[in-house]
Image (cartoon, rainbow, N blue to C red; front, top):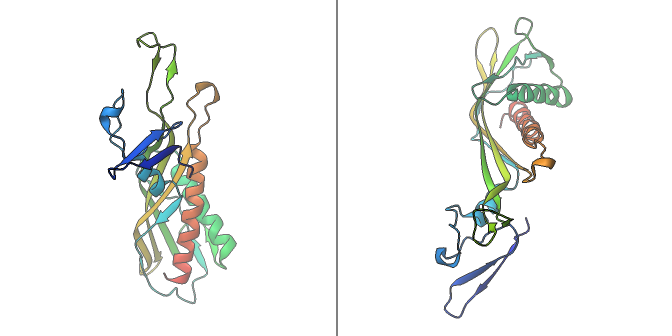
Length: 221
């Protein structure tokens, strides 16, 4: 990602940063600014979190039985306040199973050989990039301007649990309680051009999660 600041090393070996645009360098000295410096290490945070990625601890699995032909994928449980996130995840998983495997996918357990249970345990959003462009014509500022930190880029994180078990015997075929997927999205600071970018970001998370899950189940990762 482009870093909108210039940094140089002085003869004393300390790093001096000159802000340009909407970014701050993490090595600013607090007394240099006329406004409070946010306690976030923005440069490092952006470098770490902006690439979209998914993380999970390897789940437990056993080889899928050769007689398994039908897998039920009922709607995922949603333990969060995020509206309709369970629909995104469930539909993405169904599409991925249909496109990448030979199994028949159904929504009810009665006719299935195995059942895939999913649960969204947390959805978190946090700012990672801020715009600090001064606002003109502020009536409360002596100079007519005011500088505030407005979030322009957000990071959404989705935590999930998955369990695949045989319908009759309840034997665990695959289990993972530690899926974590992250995606960034931008938000506009202009109310007239506002568009909700979180929904497309959650769609991307769902697609990445489904791809990883199906690979884990089929390949017994």
